[in-house]
Length: 274
Image 1 (spheres, helix red, strand yellow):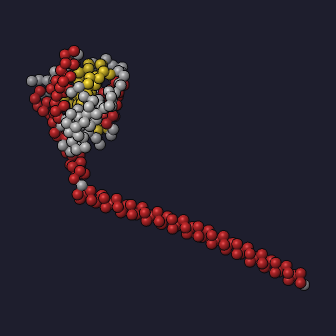
Image 2 (cartoon, rainbow, N blue to C red; image 1 turned 30 degrees about the horizontal axis):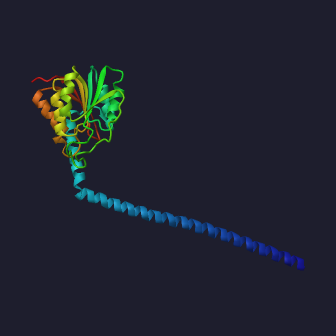
């Protein structure tokens, strides 16, 4: 009888221990889950705080950020220009794609000129795109940066290069455009088939257009790199171009543009008429 009682006690103790262990395991799992939930709640509080801060910043921008207001205004003005002058033109979302499209539209032989080389990135694209055609490629730049302040964030000296870039397949012409272009044209006769005008400034763009006046022929493609879509765009490359058109009577058509940047592609349809 005593053995039966002892066995019963042993089993009872085992059952109690097992129940205790199971309860501890369940409590441990519950505590772990609770800790996970608390951690997620803490992270959520941080995220909510960040979102609230960002919303406050955006609200502040919407009400008081002059820079943003100027950007929005410039974009609206550029959109009006597109609707009026090239509503059906192909549109690109990367400046280099716009440049490549302009190069793909070159159908005549002649000089390919870039004004504003800087590091040589776009000049390399020009060389690559025109490598199978009859084009001599030249890059013009002072290489000491902008000769004068252009717009907010782009002071005189911006884009200065420590040394001239190496661009295989192109010849560099260092110096101010007004000092180098006339002499260059005397030594290089014939039409200009392609122009990449990355001159930024009104004065620099005007200097180039005035000197190229009689080299621009039907079929010449011009890619303006900073034509519109920034505060004050009407006073720089755009102004130089429209004044040139009014003065010379040159025929042209707008071919394309970059939707979220500043590039516009133009093709000459008739040479200077006056």
